[in-house]
Length: 283
Ligand code: GUN
Image (tube, rainbow, N blue to C red; front, top):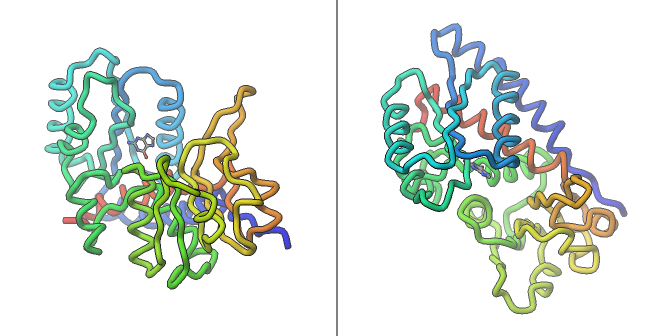
């Protein structure tokens, strides 16, 4: 039976509409949720992501501004700007778009953002709280994936979740969130031997490896739930995921498309985190 498509675009829109109400309420209380995004250099993909974040914020009534810094900016100058924003009461969320140029220590930058304004959920304090199950800003892509699974009433507890990829942004945290939901979690990565033995045993497969169409129907179990986090640009400029959609959709029970799958959910959860920051909920 062909899989049900998990429509991240539609779900994201629905959640954003609900958030608009929350933002209106906050504005009536005199709080204007505000997100500041810092972008360093002129990486076209980063620019496009930042534009998406700006547009989605405006659509939800969240105020935002983008600080553009040249690729030559010193680490010191960037850290100084972050410190200013940490102390600026009207700024609730701070996001430094990654990647940063090589001369800047990315981890140091992440750690310089106040954990209370860390709407990306990348700060070690938030990562630690996520691991212990305390209230934290959750990293947006993993948060979006869990929200999708819940919204489609997909059972997680007791299921075998296989995570392909171990990045700090997606792979590691999504595994933790699935564990918190009582899944049995296996992490696979570039050094995993017999990778497809794992993918074939997955009830829930999270593909976040950045290899176009690496997973196809023959690599998955009948009735699996397939979450494709890959955003790979093809030569013609169009996007494709880590999963070959058409063959996987013939076997899976649920599958996310690329585009209109995980991507719009990531931005939606960023807005949710910004609202949370404005409410001061993570203090
Ligand atoms: N670069 C790619 N994805 C992300 C993200 O979620 N947050 C930030 N800050 N940079 C990114």
